[in-house]
Length: 158
Image 1 (cartoon, rainbow, N blue to C red):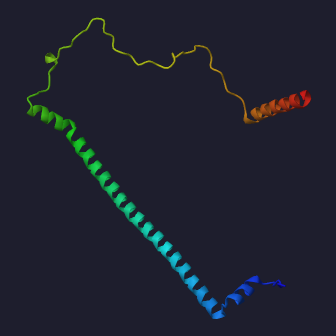
Image 2: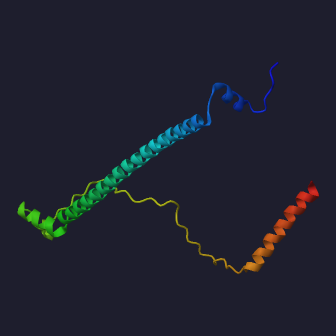
Image 3: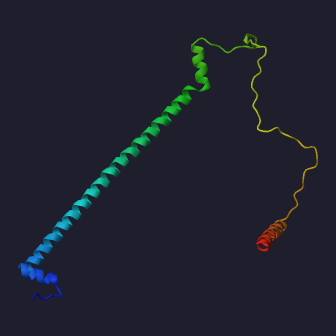
């Protein structure tokens, strides 16, 4: 007849011949390997984070350099588009400022230049302007009466 033991783990360990010293060594080894695995995972995560941060820093530095270059190019374009510079360049190419007598206008029959459209026609009323004389207390009283009427119509009609 087999007796049921309250602690089956103790019974199993007693049958297999495990001794407390072996159990301690096995648990210590297991703990060491778990700590080793967790440490490796931690180091992997830290290395990945460091690599990402280094790449982000280099991208930010590159962005800043590109912004500086763009600003330098904008300044150069503004310098090249300045009126005195354009006048000097036109003089180099043989152009000169036209006098009134040298300007000829060309009239094209039937051509009507486009006029900007307005959204709505502007109407000016000749009558008296309305006068705003409502006070805040009057407005609140009016809103209160509307609310009471609405509630009465719901309660009374329901």
